[in-house]
Amino acid sequence: MAAFDRIRDYYRRILRNSLVAVFRSPVYPYTLYRPTPKELKFTPKSSDSGDAVRGEGILSGRFDFGELGEFTSIDPWATELPSNDVAVILHTFKWLDYVAAVADTDTAKRRVRSLVNDWLLLNSRWSAPAWEGPVLAARISKWLEHYDQYFAKSSRTLRTRLLRQIAVQLVHLNRLSEFELDGAEKFIALKALIYGAICLPGKDKKFRHLMARLEREIDRQVLSDGGHISRSPSEQGTVLQSLIDIRRAIVDSQNQVPDSLQQAIDRMSPMLRFFRHQDGGLALFNGSREEDAKSIDSTLIQADARGQPPRSAPDSGFERLLSGRLLVLADTGSPAKSVRSGGAHAGTLSLEISVGQERMIVNCGAARASDSNWQMVQRTTAAHSTLSVEDRNSSELLKDGGIGRCAEIVSSLRQDTDTALSFEAAHNGYLSIFGLEHSREVRVLKNEEMIIGDDTLSATGEFQFALRFHLHPDVAVSLAQGGSSALLKLTKGGGWRFSVSGADMQIEDSIYLGGHKPKRTNQIVLSGKTKSETMTIQWSIEPAS
Image 1 (cartoon, rainbow, N blue to C red):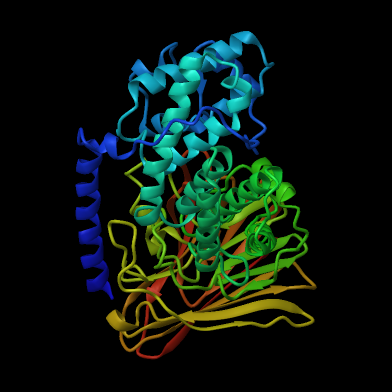
Image 2: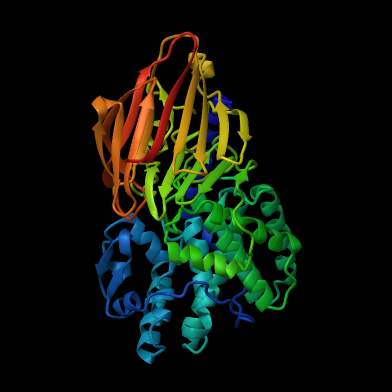
């Protein structure tokens, strides 16, 4: 499998490089030509409520994109931008939502029209990142969502120029969506294409074709329990929001919502709730970030699906143990192999723990895609709260984000009783290289605030292991009782004792990538050597007396 993946990835890179050369050729724009529509027959609504403060800033030349960065310029298209992340968000035109939140004045309309007109004059041919798939799709959607407010009564020259580019860019996006985009990006593209088929005249046949494509993607990417095939909570939210937006446009344009679309929304919504910690943010599995709790709330409100989060998600490969203030979320599945996303992670059997609204044990999370310093590191087993052997990953990580040798789940069991919630799972990621199998059992007691864990190693030789528990940056930690336990201090949740037997305990540096910016933090590392027999590392977390 690893050899096949490398060959596949090699030819995929060749194809992408060849396509870029084709897109840049002087002939390619002629292949995109389509008749310019005279007007739109429908305009969709934006699901983003916007940010009036940032919108006011844009009107005065200050572009504030939060954690991504900011800059000041009356002419942003002629300005050297602070980062590729800023360039991407600028070219998506998602900031139109910010401006739309400002009072609908003639000044705002003139400013938006000027910015869009300048972009059209400078970017009518392929360039990166402006014409890359996800950027292109987001831009088309935003132009259509805000067409009535800013462009329907603009000059004929601007309207014609904009509608021509929408038609042209839809052709290019349709090509990209067929062979280059996958995962959440595929749904972002389908949303823009479906918008185009609904909004542009004479596209009824195209609309029916896109509905069939949408149903095929739902069937391929949305699992029976409602999880997304990427196994990423962030991707879960992105896909769900795209499906909600598509549903809204279909309903508002008086078309029939496919049953498969409604059913996918109904299944995915409880799974998005499943991945939330009690602070409202998402767990950090498989390239996910915390995300904005208010945005997640908005997505779930728009979904209008009342299902509660399941206790167990066997198809997606996750467990959720919630008792009182204690919440354990655990990855009990194999890394995703069939969808190109931000990069599969080797975090099998990793877990996160929160106490009330405070996170305690976490995975390291994922930096922005443009931050190349962290892209490979964040995917490693050592960046997750699970076990690694001889500093090797439980699954082989390929540079393009894929997986070679893969940890497969050999057993998984959810077993709740009157006294405890528990799961047990095992993987064989180290079997082929070390002859070792790792199993993890976690129990959350119902009658007292206590979590008990057993990590069992079945080995045929002596190998160095490290069992890591990364701590949230807000958690203070110190060793106690001669290194057999550690004291964890939460800001609001009091003190907690982490105890261990069967391994040595150290406190080491770590990094947290789940929030707005990377933060230094600590990790508890339980280390030792395996033996030619089965051994168990026992650990527990309980309130400090």
